[in-house]
Length: 193
Image (cartoon, rainbow, N blue to C red; front, side):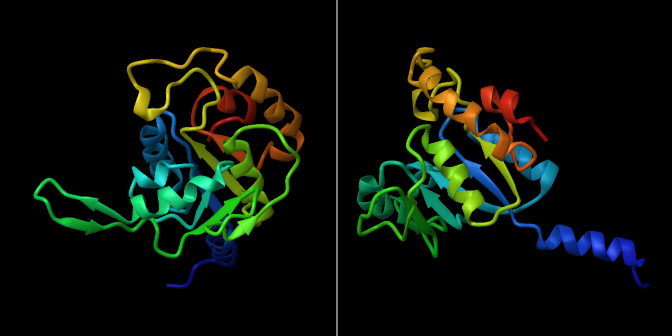
């Protein structure tokens, strides 16, 4: 049975739309990501900083404002030792494109955006420059939510967040309707799904 023309065009436009999940390192990143996939389905993924070393999914992009650390992260992300002592090759680093703001041997693409903001905002800028039409933030709340490795000690409210949030606010005209967040202050600013 043939699809009606309108349905076929709608399906085609959804299939051709470039969508990206950006995964940050707040303690809620996993819950945010699972909810996003449940609501929107599978899409390209971008990891921020060292999260690809801990969360083994297929990443298309890997971004950091600390590009000098890729030299340590990349080897760490390639393998994991299982509980039975066996080494397992991870999906994370196969064919991933790395992005930074400075040239380093492990950085595939150098971007020169205006200074300021967080690695999360840098990731958003890279995503939009790459042509993604819908960008979803998981684990990038920009509030006092602790990093996933610091679940027992919440961040202090002045952890640079109050200083960095104004860069997000200044960028709102370019982000609204294109960038959405699953949690926190960024969800309040950008809206959820």
